[in-house]
Image (cartoon, rainbow, N blue to C red; front, side):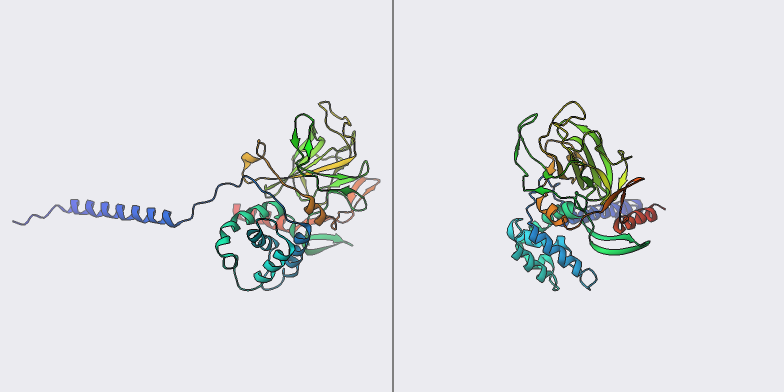
Length: 338
């Protein structure tokens, strides 16, 4: 006698087989999907001014060409080959090779395993400095592409500086200088290097009167410290305000190194300018914050100054400014939410 199992038992066996097959497919797919790298914990930014300048030039020159070569791509390829040192010769070689049909992976071979780290690091450090913007001249908005960030020192005001990142400091406790000092005249107008949101404004025992501005993509925190006694900030500026690159934010001074507010305890009038990179929010205020040496970035920005002037109505920009990339991003978010 041939025994045939009930139809419902056969159906259940088929379902079990399908479940096992689907589970096998899921496990197999997980094995071939690359695991996301851990969050970056440290960036030793060492790209020299000459290399930044050359990569920027190539980026701007190729913007409207069939193949636009991003300066971050150029620097990332060069960094993989030189351990992040990016000498000019290596940057020039990377730029010329990227103008061909070869991809970074094809150009780097085994060194490509470092490309993701450098590209993410340089995007965090430089990502908001180049792009599309518009300046209003004679009542007309003139769009352009290029360096859209500004020197923190307004046009027409002199300053001196050197690469002092990492120099010892002792007030409060022994530590390293995690910023860049720019010496100038008392009351020199200070402008926002990049647009963003005013995240901190007030007194700090180390920085005196200081301002902290977070970039629109949240990756960069700009720190401006030792601002002027009695009149440190641009009139009306408050936490939560949105500023554009080149907007007046404060005035150079020598406040700080005091628990008491509005005290001049810094010997030399200067701006302490710092840049913190943030890859995840837990890095914002912790014992392992990522501050980078901005000396060569400041040199790059020196030729791009924001013109401000004082009128009977107060301070104003000579040339109103729009960050077209930010406007496009905001419009895209609005369309996505509608």
